[in-house]
Length: 79
Image (cartoon, rainbow, N blue to C red; front, side, top):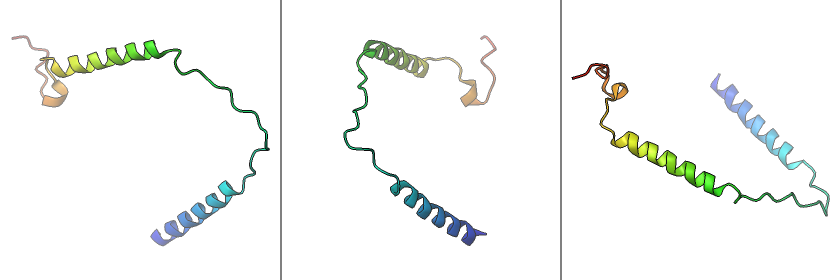
């Protein structure tokens, strides 16, 4: 079974190589793709990054019960 898988995978890789390199190139003088501005939502991305970072910092530094890590369900009991 193992040699058949090896032979089949080698044949598929060789065939994929021929398929990729046999495609025709685009015609010369093709128009350039339209440019998209990437800086239009930078403040929103920055704010989301700050909020996500704050969430992970608070989660790491909180002193609450972590029942998934301790294996005990003593989070519901109040002392």
